[in-house]
Image: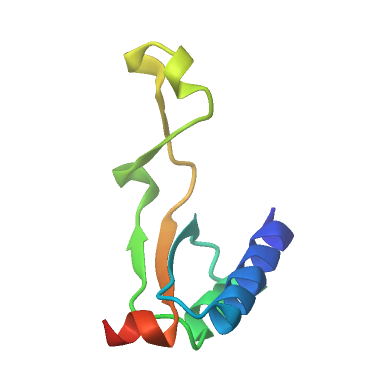
Length: 95
């Protein structure tokens, strides 16, 4: 999965370079700070430079097919701390 996240970050950066309109991405990833994708996100020229890290014990996720599950089974506790990044192009930064 880390390789997929790294490829996603590179794709987002290419899109931010190419798109003419105001564009913003919110990226939530495991807080695996030792892996290459984390360095890409924290050093990205497109980042608004604020990283929010939420401890695993403080959040959960909706798994796929949550609409088919009972309300008590819709959320799964997070296995890892998560990092939230906001990447945006120059037009969005001006807004």
